[in-house]
Length: 170
Image 1: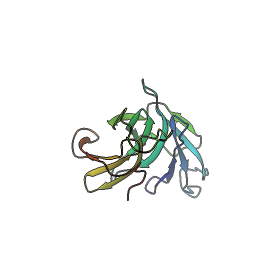
Image 2: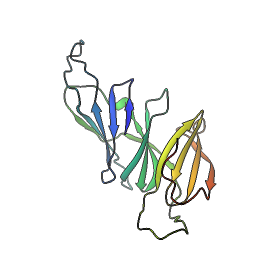
Image 3: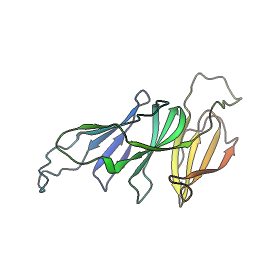
Image 4: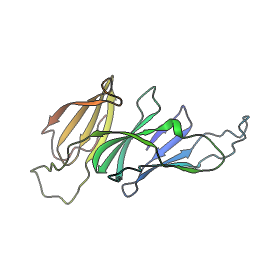
């Protein structure tokens, strides 16, 4: 989950769904918009891609952007959603073209450590300055993306052998 204070939304994901839930958490009933919906579903951001998408885990909004970076396990990637598509309206709706970009994560790489049936993929995400760090559970690594490169960032380094199944960053 991640809270978007600027827009008044809470974004939540599920490890079994191909979409991100956007909940309206700001009470706008006393404004000119007349939107009295609060703490209810505002939109579904659908990962409508050719390869499909399920198992969203970590969510992150880089400061000063209208973008949501969502860690995806199937396929292992970081999907970028356009938050400008989410409007505070009186009825909930599905945003079917919300995915506008994808960053690669290590694929088909499983650690040689202890036996596990888990297949999680990217699992933790944080930002320091212009660098985005993503923990890769199965690859025992941390991917480093430079957000100044490309449209949504580019992979610039892979930190390997960070321990057995990293799952969180701070």
